[in-house]
Length: 508
Ligand SMILES: C[S@@+](CC[C@H](N)C(=O)[O-])C[C@H]1O[C@@H](n2cnc3c(N)ncnc32)[C@H](O)[C@@H]1O
Image (cartoon, rainbow, N blue to C red):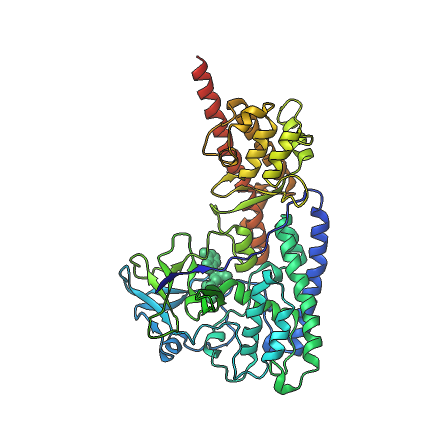
């Protein structure tokens, strides 16, 4: 069997960009992170071996001062590593798997037998399992990385762990925003991401307390971490290790014959960095005689000497790349700007854009019905809409604007929702409605851009100087969001211009 595999995507929904709640989000982020950093300092003295991060850098420094030879370990344990591969330090992007000679397309690069991936499952030889499971019960589904993180911490604390050659090679520090200072969380300047960082920091602080309560009453033989204390910092290290490295693969076979999706840490395979244009991919293989899965990396293209082996972690926004992996992709075609659909705001911005008497906040009955179908009106409406990405404007937003800018119900009822939501079908309700709708989106972009306290030029000039890496990441992130807005405005303006020109040619 040959199954495709995919990077884990966080299942959380980022909250809306609420224009009014920005300041309070920032304040909360600051205080939580201050607490978090205090906890780090305390933990270092109490349980130095679980210390997850000391400085915030994207360094290649590893848990073990002299990390074991990971390639040799994988081979010794029955895995395959192409002899033309080596691990290299890339500098800014940490360690990476690189071809030491040209490798032809289709070659097997790495193969792991089923006992090498680390997953969260009951292992009979582990003494502390029941407590580990009890701890895992307190983890919300969307923070799945923490669950596997507990298993990782367990192995990190175990003397003579089978996985030590892997764990010793894990980064000592991570550049994820949960480790940023309050000031650098503020520097992100984007409420949806700040909200998520906040939520994770809050969870780690609360989970530390809950874990302490469970662990303090345990006998040493039942302690999942060999009697070692856990702190928000060690939990944060574990969560960051998993969110930035785990893959979701086919796990055990379920009673219905299907495979469960299981997050796993894949030694060596997780030394491959990300690209949207990868030269390798992961496949899972299982032969009829052996129920155990083999996880392989295969070259999708020829890989030249000294080129890194790259996997695609997923078509993710910069929010997820920063939150889960600690990096930002410049000009990321899948990056999105979140906005809250708000009739009153739309009235204000469209008036500024010269739309005469807009009535976004007071839709007619038939318009309300369509807004309900778009899930933008009524109880339980989902008001989060996005700009950017491959769709440019959220289909629900463009459909709502088209409908609200049209007075003729009959004209609208000629089209199904799919057509109304599509930007590819040009101007279903006529050029005038279309250009007004697009101008409203451009005006929304202007407001969103003005909402950032800094200008792109200021960001650029800060980045030209020497800045700490967490501040650099925060500034890169916000700058990319602003560039995204400008890109959307440019593309929409071109569209409006083209439509207006075509219309005047037709009239002539
Ligand atoms: C699965 S690990 C890859 C191995 C990692 N470079 C290391 O040193 O262990 C993912 C991490 O690698 C780094 N990384 C991977 N792809 C990157 C990219 N395209 N740009 C920047 N950093 C990247 C990030 O630090 C990310 O959290």
